[in-house]
Image 1 (cartoon, rainbow, N blue to C red):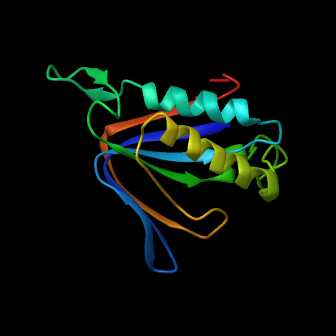
Image 2: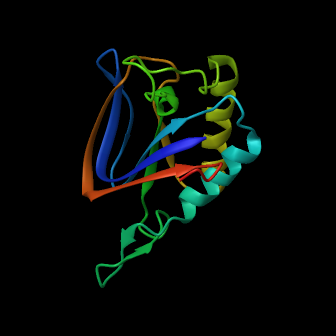
Amino acid sequence: MRAVIQRVVRASVQVNGHTVGAIGRGMLVLLGVAVRDTDADAAYLAKKIAGLRIFDDQDGKMNRTIMQIGGAALVVSQFTLYGDCRKGKRPSFTDAAPPESAVRLYEEFIACLRNEGVPVATGVFQAAMQVSLVNDGPVTFLLDSSRQF
């Protein structure tokens, strides 16, 4: 399971011109699910994200978690995080989980993140979405449950 984490001032996602999820201060989580992922990957990544100290303290150092700043997470599914562009001009998505299993793990990740105490807004799985954000910093991190990076 992979995630791109962006610290945001605000973020929202629209489907067919309607806002389906929006947050103020917090993080945008773009989440990709791989064919080999399990519930353990979802739990690991949720715990890791909830505990990330990426928000500034009173001294301007990244030392506070999303819960400590009263923030929220906007979670958006993004299978293209498993796009392999190493060969040719067209990405291969063979490592991305098929929609039937990906949706279950996407929802499991959201449940785990909520169980960590993080307020969560979401996009719509497998929909064409328009994501808007104001990146704070900019601050962006890449996470992988198999710890490839």
